[in-house]
Amino acid sequence: MQHATGMTRIANGKLIDGTGTSSVSDAVVLIENGCISYAGPAKGAPLADPAAEQIDALGGTILPGLVEAHYHPTYFNVAALEDLDIKYPVEYVSLLAAANARLALECGYTAARSGGSLFNVDVWLKKAIEEDVAPGPRLATSGREICGVGGLMDWNPDYRKIGMEGLVLLINGPDEGRAAVRTLVKDGVEWVKTYPTGDAAAPDTNDHHTLCMTQEEMNAVVVTAHNHKMKVTGHCRATEGIKNALRAGYDTLEHGTFMDDEALEMLLARDTPVIPALQFEHASVVKGPEIGMPQAVIDGHQETLEGGMESALKIFKAGGRLGMGGDYGFAWNPHGTYAKELSFFVEQVGFSAVDTIKCATQTGAEIMGRAEEFGTLEAGKLADVLVVDADLEKNIAALEDTGNFIAVVQCGFIKAGRLAQHQPAVRGVVQ
Ligand SMILES: [Zn+2]
Image 1 (cartoon, rainbow, N blue to C red):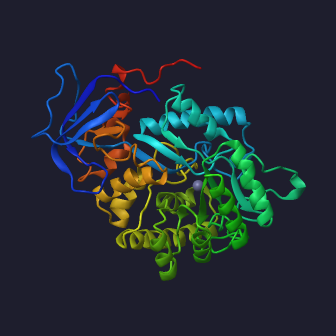
Image 2 (cartoon, helix red, strand yellow; image 1 turned 90 degrees about the horizontal axis):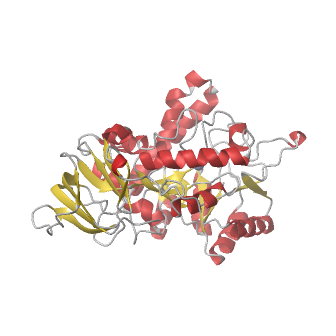
Image 3 (spheres, rainbow, N blue to C red; image 1 turned 60 degrees about the vertical axis):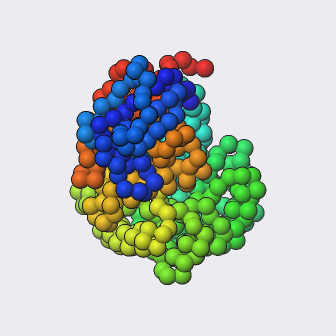
């Protein structure tokens, strides 16, 4: 990704630097050649080059670019299961994914970790973004997912003769788990996304207390993935599935919904980050009736929401790590509303804005394995910065409206927000 040249000075705003420390009022952030050279109080800040580009934060907030830690670029207005696998050909899915990536950047998300993608769309989308062919968040890729035969992601009955191979690799036993991971190695993905458990969405056969992979399968997946320097994550709702994933050595847990004391202890001992993705559950409960969601599914989402809120709070209070993100791209939880996750944590779970932003920035970068490069506003980090015309400690929901964004900065370039017209969003050169 191309770096800006020259100096930019952001001033007249409150700094929330992403480390979880208290905000700094009247702060200055200096950017030189695409990297941060200073972030701190205006008083004592180094003098900027008189030719520096000036960004006035208008008394609002300066924070790191946000990280979506469970991003599905190929989910698009998903209302039914077939929307996830066979609604569109891969060619159109690729175009939709590029549009979603642009939208995420416009929403202040300068980085995202894929939580699974149709075919290898996210692998190639990452290349396009890195080469400035298409605008979007810096990506960590996941590609196709792995699930046990008959599990949550194996929904097409055999008589339909529909292969699932574009979405998920279905396995029976550890040998097939190893084989599936080896296929993904060749795809070039960084994360192996698996399904240790079911979900409220499938109450009859694979509900949120059902296991969809065996311990042996999960062990085989992790050993093979780690051997090839890939990381492993999984959709973990049921308590036993959470423990199986932790025993197997998963690098993160998606959802981590029903944590008992033993699971929490195991999690903390391994310092494994969890991405709760609570807004999806909340939206399912609130909007379920009007979209005709079966009552059993709504009830399951309610139980999941309550369990997930309790677990997230326990994990964070005990010193565990949480990432913010989750399953945007469903009809009732669309792309472009990612910041609702942050609002939910502040308004419903009771987190402070500073803690929530830490989860959405520093921890997100840690999950991506790139905390040395971005995720906080500190000298030496890449200049991925969000400047918002609002005091986020008083109004976190201001992040939901891109009209409040003064600048979304990536590598020192203003790529979105009110000031974006002064800089080209992309080079526009297809290589
Ligand atoms: Zn997901």
